Image (cartoon, rainbow, N blue to C red; front, side):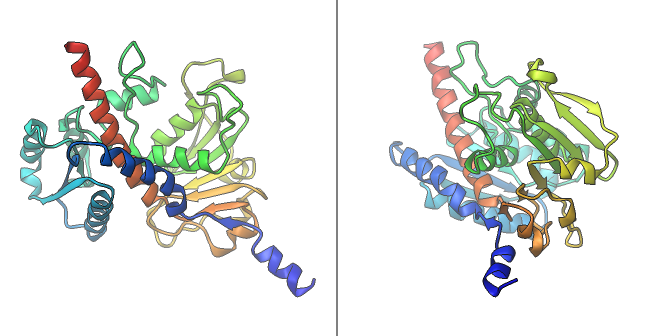
Amino acid sequence: MSTLASQAVKTAGKTILASTIAKRFTDEIQLATSKLPKPPKLVGLLANGDPAAKSYADYTGKTSKSLGFDYELRQVDKEALEEEIYKCNEDDSVNGMIVYFPVYGDHQDQYLQQCVSLDKDVEGLNFKYVSNMYHNIRYMDEKHEKKSIVPCTPLALVKILEYLGIYNPLLNYGDRLYGKTVTIVNRSEIVGRPLAALLANDGATVYSADVNNIQLYERGDGLTLKKHRVVECSKTLEECAKSSDVIVTGVPSASYKFPTEYVKRGAVVVNFSFEKNFADDVKQKASLYVPSTGKVTIAMLLRNLLRLMENSKKGEKDQA
């Protein structure tokens, strides 16, 4: 094999950076905030000592301010977090809030998520939003004027797949992943499981893998179901991955690497973990590789805040 041919093999796949994907959204967000009478206020509540959470909070603040938002980070003791959430709920000057989880790392965190007002939940973790997402309900009202809020990290991954051309715009809205197969290595309640539901609701066949088992999310033959269903899957991770057009990983371990030999040639691979879940040789198999997603996630968070404000205005108009 010639040197030129060898180089071609090594660089067959293309790396797509999150910053490139996020730019369209950040431009739209900046334009929207420039037309508002005053900057929307986002409050971040940090009640843990995790350096990664502090780093994420700082980056959120930097990005928010650069796009025309007023961002305030409040570091509080975790025992005072619930009270601080309620203060933000009652403060009309606060348009949205983000709580940096985990705090307790158990069901207490789920309780705290529900303490955040429906009108200020930029992360889309309120039970109403989560319920809508799983039941494939995309609006908050019968007129279909107020869009439901989608959890920002799963939403970011949807937007990334749209950017990469995985969604087929020729199909009807809501069916545009029909014919696509996706493997997701993560089934957390914050990202992995919601993402599997979102992609299946859009028509994909989704294999959701965690340390315990693999589940299949799908809408039936010919998308006969309105929302996804979850069924048992007897396939191995290797079998699932080798049949997948897209592989998404989110394993929070520096030692974990998804086996490159499981990647179907020409597949798209995306990693949303803070850790690098794919080895450098993945581009010898994958056509497109997105190594991180954080910048798109923050763009979706700020986009959600603007949507909450739009929904609030529409609600006020309905009551007038």
